[in-house]
Length: 79
Picture (spheres, rainbow, N blue to C red):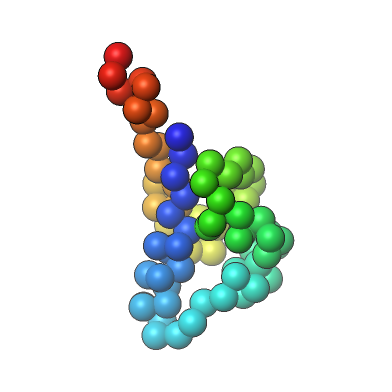
């Protein structure tokens, strides 16, 4: 499963810049709809496009591994 770390990146940016970062701000800066950003942040197992992930990496100035991580399924880890 892929776990998105968007909330963590938002929190990091807020801490570094000492201000609130809104989903609307991210949406305007990236061209990704606010609804899609909300789904990436809040929906377990959301299926995002690589284009959206690329734009988020550009916005947060980070590598993909800081936006998403692979979590092995519990069924596969037993094999």
